[in-house]
Every structure is written in structure tokens, then in C-alpha cells.
Image (cartoon, rainbow, N blue to C red; front, side):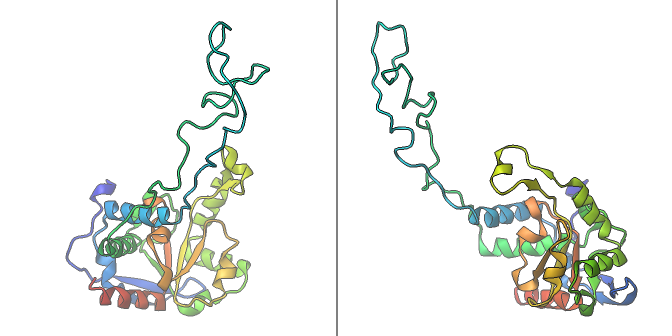
Length: 270
């Protein structure tokens, strides 16, 4: 079903309501043409992997790791394997021994970054933006919301909140706070050793809020809500729009951010 959710090449004018801080409709706005761009899941996946792998830091092993124990094979006639051993009989150095070297250790010269063409990246971002206006794709990601028309567009003044309690009240008025509660319920402790290395919890992604100004107090107000991200238009990328390479994130735009988005992609010819 999800594979059939593609937008036609023809640009269709779509109007969405504009909400104020109380959740009331105060007008409407025409979505920019970028929201009529075809949803290309393959392109979005490639762009996500390119952005994600660019953040990875190459790592390797000490060339002498596992090789610092002085051992010598006892040879034949001792009824033991011919691997390097200490005088007390403990096997060392070999890959299958405790404390021995790794057979195929990670190397810093391994190519871990996936490259992508500039035009492909721009089209992938446009495709991910278009996916935020499809309720079917947003539900397929697991988001819960009350609105029938997406994306959610709010007045610029609606996001002038400085406290998390006000941000929570705003999201409840907009009918999207149930998605934040979903993330809170599904946050869990990570399996494995990662929980001992500064990443104890696994937290799903919830709302994405796209703002027009980098200096709003909204960043501090929303950062305590689980899974919620706030990003300005100038820094919007596939990492924000399609976490995990899966398009259709539940997104809130300010009216000015929507206009800036339209001008940005109009210059690019989209």
C-alpha cells in the first residue's frame, strides 16, 4: 500500500488551515509547490544514509592490541594445540584466545561515508518535505494525531512560548500531543552494552517543529518533551524529515517558515 502513495507530476494547489495558540482556525494558506513533489522513498533512503554516515568517526585498533604478551609455541608432544603459550600454559596472541588479537580489526581507512550527488540530495529533501503532507505516510511511521489535513501550520506568534508547560498546552490545543505521549510510553532501556556508554535509553521520534527564526525561545520550551525536535528552515535536512530513512514525520510549520521554504525551493527550480 505504501508503495502506491506517490504524488502525480502535476502540481496541485492545496490549501491547509492556519491555527493560533488556542487551536482555532484563523485563516488558510496555499502550500508551496515543493509539497507536490513526488515521494521517492529510494532517494530519501540514499540521502539519509549519506547524511548519517557523514557523522560517523573512523575508528581503528592499536596495531599492538593483543600482541603484548610474550608467548611461544610448545611444539608437538605435549598434547596441546600449537599456539603461543606462556610458561604456565595459558594461550596468548592468537585470535581465538582470551586477550589475543582480533582476526579482522576495524581500520581507519575503511570507506564508511556514502556519497550522493547534489541534485539527488536536494530532490530527496523536497521529497521528504512533500511526504509530511500525506496523512497515510505519517500514520505508517506510527504517529498519532487528530488532524485530518497535514501538515499542521501555525501562526508565528503561536510558538512564542518560553516554558515546557506552555509548549505542552499548545500541542494539546493543536491535537498532536498524543504523539508525544506515545513516545513517552515507548521509551525503553537499550539492550546491550550501549546502556553503559552514555546511551542508556532508546527514544522514538515524535514531532518535528520547523521555525523561521533561530533565536526563538521555542528551543528551550520543547526540548524537555520526549521525541520532539525544533529546527530552523535553514538547517532542515533529511535527518530531521525522515528519521531512519522513513519519510512521513509528523511536522508543524510556522507560516513564515512555510513561505521561506517555498522561496528556497523555487530558486532551486522545484
